[in-house]
Image (cartoon, rainbow, N blue to C red; front, side):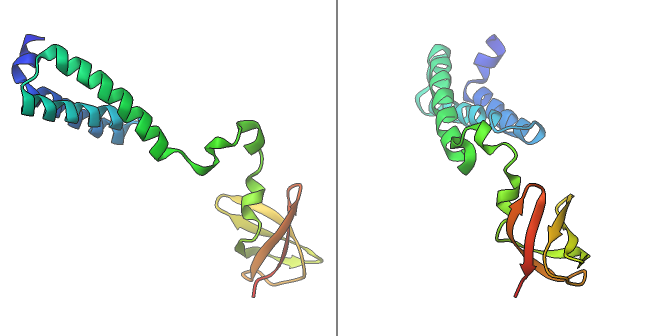
Length: 148
């Protein structure tokens, strides 16, 4: 502890940079906010030469503030929808989008590839490679039309 206190603001600045660097190695977006709080604590310690107790209290307060602000900044648009209402609704995101036929539509049935998933499609007979627009979904089948 005495060695860290002897480093003064450098301990906070180095610690903040280490936390931000660890964020790149670990999943999530939490360490970055603690790293920012540590950097701000280091700057405050450098400007005002604060005692170590004030540094710890300042870091705790800045960490809480940084996490709250960070959560608001990184919240996704669908996060306010309860998880049970988002479950198994991936198909809704496909409606209105255009994809290329992976396999031709023959006798009204074909296939498209969306990322790593192959979907069964129903629509007018079209050759493979034709762009199609998803009109609606029925269970795991997409209803498509030729895209203009």
